[in-house]
Length: 194
Image (tube, rainbow, N blue to C red; front, side):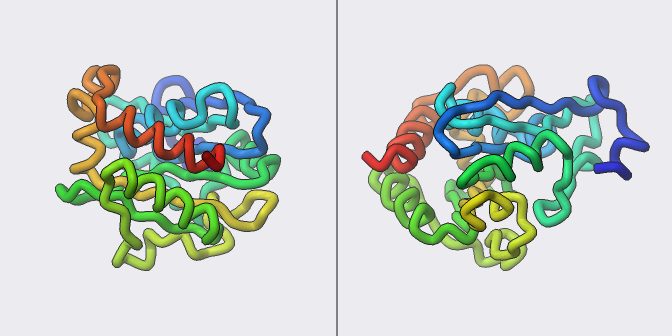
């Protein structure tokens, strides 16, 4: 992040969002806005006012991919502090692919299985990513740096994210679809244990 901050300006190229919840769970989108479109909106919906919400949002007109800090190297101060104060973390990411799927990773296997069960019941295709880099297995991954030593990483395909909004433009992401509502409801139920 120190390197990124030398080349990019807060408020012009990126901004951070943080609201503190009381549940001990943080729902984060470290690549929000134009970096991985739809992830910030989804994380915020899942968090509501119960869970801590954090997002690093790319707001450049173009080239938001330049703001991508890998999950193992993610060290923006507010995000890292929120994660370390939390018992567990859900990290919402976006991946390429026209398929409509969510790939779950991270080191909290129990929570991962619970989330998988609720998402499948809600009609979503849930898999383990075939790409090791997207499985969230590293202890250094931002989703695993929480108090419990393991969280859950969501990699949501572009195809599925497109179904959650009118489209993935900044304006289109203001219009949520039934798909997003169903996904959020399943994730919230998994977190509440109901």
